[in-house]
Amino acid sequence: MEGLINVPDNPQVDKGGNLWKTLLLTFLGTTMSILLTFGTSALVQQHRRMQDRKMTVLMVMGSVEKFAQKLDERAQNLERNDTMATYLLNIPADSLENPGYQSNIKLIGVPLGIAYDKTAEMVFINNTASWSSTKYFDFINWAGVCFYNMKEIEDKHNSYIAEFEAALDDIWDHPELHPGTSMKAKFLRDKKYRELLEGIHNKAAYYRYLAAKMRDHNRVSMEMMDVSEKELMKFVEDNEAVALMKNTTRSLQQYTTPPLNIDSLPALEEWIGE
Image 1 (cartoon, rainbow, N blue to C red):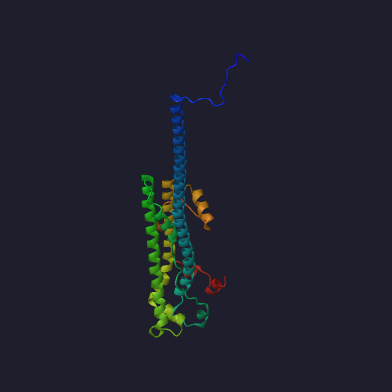
Image 2 (cartoon, one colour):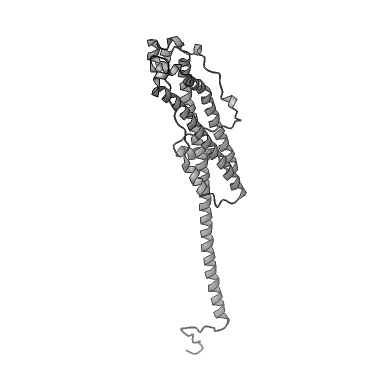
C-alpha cells in the first residue's frame, strides 16, 4: 500500500550526542548505586557502633550497681554478726568457762569476701578507643573513677579479711599462748579478737554508706549518657540482679548508729533460738 513509511526492524543509533548521553546516564547510575551502597553500609556501621557503646555504658553501670548490692549484702551479714558480737563482748570474764555460756557461744569467723566483676571493665577498656566526642570523654573518665573506687573497696575489704584470719590463726595455732581452758574462752579473752568484734558495728554502717555512694556514681553516669533509671534497672534485672537506686545526698553519719546495748537485747538463748 502506498503512503506508508517503512520502519526498519533495528533502528539506527545516532553516532553523535545520543551515544554520549547513554554513557553519561550509565556512569551516573553506577556512581549513585555505589554511593548509596557505601552510604547505607556506613549508616549501618554507625548504628551498630552506637548500639555497642550503649551496651558498654549499661554494662559499666550494671557492674557498679551489682557491686553496690554486694556491699549491702555484706552489711546485712555484719549487722547480724554485730548482734552476736554484742552478746559475746558482754559475757563477764569470770563466766566465760561457764557451761551455760559455752553451749550458747557461737564464735564469729572470717567475713565473706567482696569482689567486683572485671568483665565489664575489660569490655569497657577494649571499646573506648574510638569514642572521640567530649561527651564520651567525660564518661570514660568518670567510669575510670568508679572502677578505681571498686578496686579500692575490694582491696581494703581483703585487708580486713586478712586481719581477721591472722587473729583467728594465731589463737588456733598457738592456743598455749592464750589464757582459758576452752577455745571459745581463749578467743573471747584475746584483745585483738575483741577489737575486731567491737569494730563490726561501724563496719556494717560503712558498707551501707559505700553502697549508697556507688549508686550516686551511677546517677552521675546516667545524667552524662542520657540513660534513664528504668533502662538501667531493666538491664540489671535482665542480668539477674535487683537495682535499688535512690537520689539523696550521702554522708557517713546517715548510716552510723549507736552501738547495741546488751540491756535492749533479749536473752542470748532466746535470740539464738529465733
